[in-house]
Length: 360
Image (cartoon, rainbow, N blue to C red; front, side, top):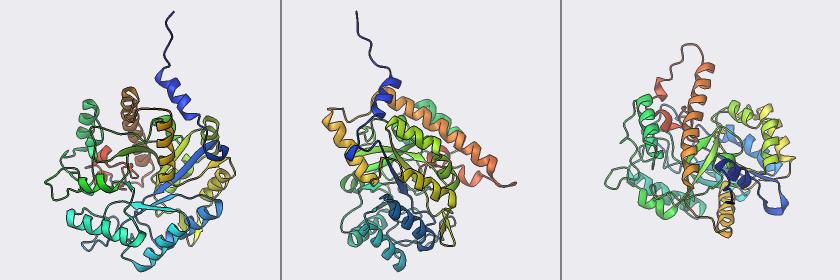
């Protein structure tokens, strides 16, 4: 009698039941993209994370944006002395700093090179994790180029009315080309996202290699929470229960600069959610530490580095579905008269910490 092979769903369940360091039952971390971040609106959140024992990951922009930015002009960069000192202190406290591009708007190669060197000068080494930012033209493998499915690519292009040649960071010869530097300096890059807290249910085989996108050595997925409201909803106790019960891992991508703190005080629901999570038997590393550990576990299990085909197909369809659900919710909660057309040109492609239809 022939043995039955496990289904994709049963393999996914099995892959979410892991043994984490020190006997912890699950793993959790956060990537905070630097959009609209300032010392004033970020420090209360990081003070709380430090007190609760979380060591998370924060992106930075190394250089200023002299041309200005309509959507991110309030953001601070490492060119601001107070913000630079704040970021250095975070590194000393055990938080991980990494890269969200050179600055808040598109950068041609010379500015990207200068920004990488400035980052190294400040933090002692090049960043290890690359996270594309919103509409920056130097984004690598962004837009519909994140997807392989011809049907999904076509649907997204029609929905977004978006030029597939807009993001060209991986294209040698482009003014925005820096793919060689990405390959040389970065270890990990973020691609697709999910609306569920347990990232392992969406992408149990991460981090993974993608032969079609070779300039990023290893890819990973994240759980998306664009705003404080989405973050609080994602960290609802019932979702925390599921994450712990399934023995999964989570990397939440969010923006702490987007109203997580007011007048020096962290949103009370956010505080309560994080306090409850900290009381659970979880492992709370930086994103880089978690990805390194997952990679070592896969190597120890002799798992192949590329994604199983069925897992990748399922991820793409779930990603597009989740983005549609999120955009619908955002539209329903938008003030009367709010137009979403500002965010339509990049469409599905624009959702990254990103991953939301509001620029990352």
